[in-house]
Length: 70
Image 1: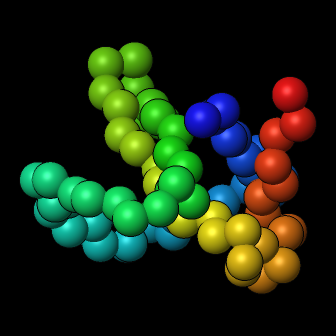
Image 2 (image 1 turned 120 degrees about the vertical axis):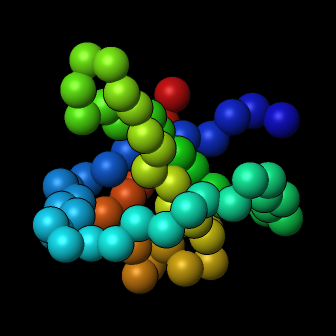
């Protein structure tokens, strides 16, 4: 199966004061509609941004994501 990728079309701002909870230790995904990227806030730290971009709901997200054509 060829890897699919999406491209972010606009900035996503996480407002200060947003509360982050402990992430699940182990997850199981039942579809291949989940996309993630690594983000860094400093030279020595990293985190992850993940979003489910379901093809059936892409019209709701078309201002944020498009599929990368390779």
